[in-house]
Image (cartoon, rainbow, N blue to C red; front, side, top):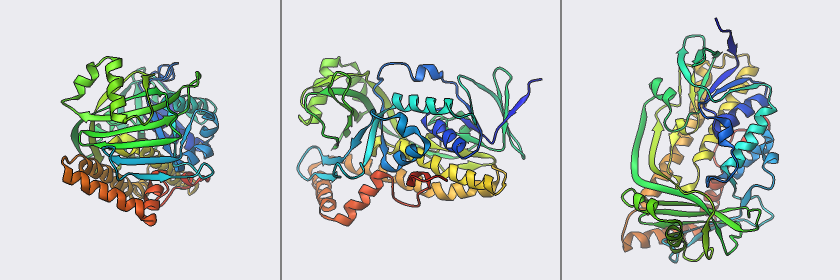
Length: 409
């Protein structure tokens, strides 16, 4: 009979959120075992796959505490301005910081994030990874959780943390109630090299067919200026754009960008995926806690999806570390209730805000466009309101966990 391997927590899901949580817990003395079916070698294979993330400045402060930021040195492009417009017309709203101030965020290739996290995990003796590995059986009992892997290995802990992403089998098997709907849109993502420098400016242009974002990346090894793009189109148009050759697709990109970055050239594979919304009514159950996209999936309109998951990480890590210091059972219902209170409302409000923006900017017609431009202009003229939105973009609003404030727990 196989020996049962024990740890303080089990983490089902070894993506960016699950690995960051394991590092945060290990730094504060808690052990974890990560299980994921993905091959870690494949996730850090050479070559840019076009996926990149905007890391809010508060999240970056957590990366600094955890030692991740040092491993990303030279690979991140600071965002010092965000310019928002309705169809590229007059009435633009801009959020600008000086080069001396903290950036609003940092754009990083996801592959670079995965490499930095893998290096951090390799130096963390309190983290054990089982990747690739399949879970054959889950047992959630009164005193703990046991996962049996396909090869017979048994893992046990007082708490199971689910970080499996949007289509989470563990979440669904545990009976969590999920509200969700489709936006009937597809997001096309990738990266381009362009003739004009981006100046560390992110652009968000709202069209009736969906938002179009250009996000600054560091220049490549050949010195070419680069940006990531997130282009939303209706689901009926998605297949047509996917069939376009690179030249035709690039011509459409340049048209959408309106000459902001000059001529463009694709430098990464294009990807297309359907957009939807989902939110779990609760993020905890008996000895189970949800983090990241397993708990909430939002529209990429404001680039907050990964940051929302990493805010879950910071809050849950603080709750568990403080609970361990008090000698509490880490699967205790009262302890998990604190995490529910802390993150439940914030994640719901962010989710609903992005959903409302998606619907507001999707209303066609000149009247709706005029109202939107008037709204953008009003925010532009009101410093207090503008500063509120800048704090939201930085991830610094609300009751911040210590890690997001740049402090140890």
